[in-house]
Length: 464
Ligand SMILES: NC(=O)c1ccc[n+]([C@@H]2O[C@H](COP(=O)([O-])OP(=O)(O)OC[C@H]3O[C@@H](n4cnc5c(N)ncnc54)[C@H](O)[C@@H]3O)[C@@H](O)[C@H]2O)c1
Ligand SMILES: O=c1ccn([C@@H]2O[C@H](COP(=O)(O)OP(=O)(O)O[C@H]3O[C@H](CO)[C@@H](O)[C@H](O)[C@H]3O)[C@@H](O)[C@H]2O)c(=O)[nH]1
Image (cartoon, rainbow, N blue to C red; front, top):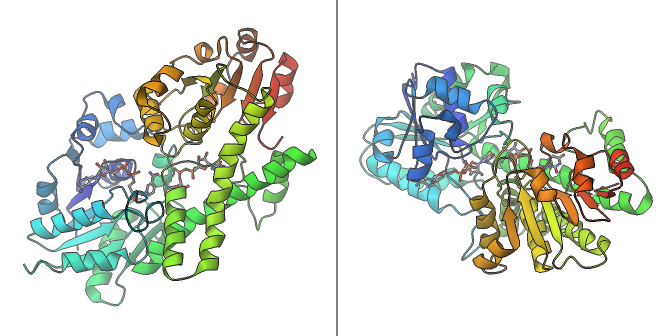
């Protein structure tokens, strides 16, 4: 089966970059990314390619090359569905905030809306691909909805979870560790659909890296992969607290442990806590699924990864307060970095939001600098927590676009995102312009303790 037209529903952090790379690597395939968010689509179509709504190194160049040639962004969802042979569903699947499974289960309302719309609009057979991260067995629900139209259109459902990490999305998409495709391997139509998707990826991914499985394994592998990665971060963060009590250094411990080839060195960087839109949501979802099958021990085991992460964020903020003589009321605290990791403008579940909220509850005055996050986003993150009025957030938090300005006259600095530029700051000048004692809290192990202490900072770092 030759695919000519691809539609992707959802022009977010996954849909945008993934489709841009497919369009670049398959110039003969027309790729249309659609979204109900008009402003987002407008930005994807902005003549100045630097204004596209997702910041990822290397992405604007690809969009510039492919946009208007075989890559299109549109709000006309129906037309794109109608024209496509292959439809990726890449909409958000956040944690439910209401009803059964509130705070745990994935909210599948947007997925279901997509399925219903595809069912309603389609006049020809289609391959429908789960790109969003979904609970295991969601494909069965999609199949039910799609097969109930009664208009004779045939749908093949595949699971093709995305493993890209933000900040390295383009590199991860161009050079994936693996591509996972789950489908109905027992039927000829199922195998044909899987082959069609394999062929798209085979345009640039070596065949041995393209893995095909049954649908349920594919769906569950995605949740499992994120649970394993997050578990490593929580494991090293648990050890970081022990390091602080014993004189061991978490970086040295991580290096010694990670050099065991059975463990490996990646994802052992202690931090103020993992953030991002995926780890917490996907583990909560896994825990919820395990509980729904009455697997209490399995659920409790994975839940601990989240409990540890919440503890890490809280204890970092509490340590700041304790160190600063048990009060930060009316003290100026500069937060360097708001994104959940470097090289992205995404702030979802960023540790910075929770640390700031904790300090605001202690009546601190906060100045924030992040090279890629807007003031509007920072206020909206704080407002969303609902800890105080929106006005109170604007009164207590000032967002600036120069790190030196954030630190000037501050009692303390907290480094909460590992942006490279923070290493290069003139730390002597920062110190000179701060109130003394000048407290510096490194939540990312970004800065060298010896040089900062030499300058005169009261320096604290996770796991040191
Ligand atoms: N962000 C990541 O790094 C990442 C990586 C791998 C997998 N995932 C998974 O991919 C999925 C998408 O994540 P994201 O970060 O791109 O989300 P996102 O919120 O950035 O983008 C989702 C988009 O879908 C749109 N949308 C929702 N319902 C729609 C509908 N019915 N019709 C048209 N558009 C609709 C929204 O307007 C939004 O722009 C999630 O399931 C997530 O778990 C995310
Ligand atoms: O050693 C580490 C590694 C990561 N982190 C933090 O963990 C969070 C997540 O980082 P990362 O995994 O690099 O970014 P994400 O974009 O959230 O990517 C994860 O989540 C995606 C969405 O499901 C998956 O596709 C990716 O494979 C998976 O890495 C960030 O806050 C990091 O700062 C640490 O604290 N220490």
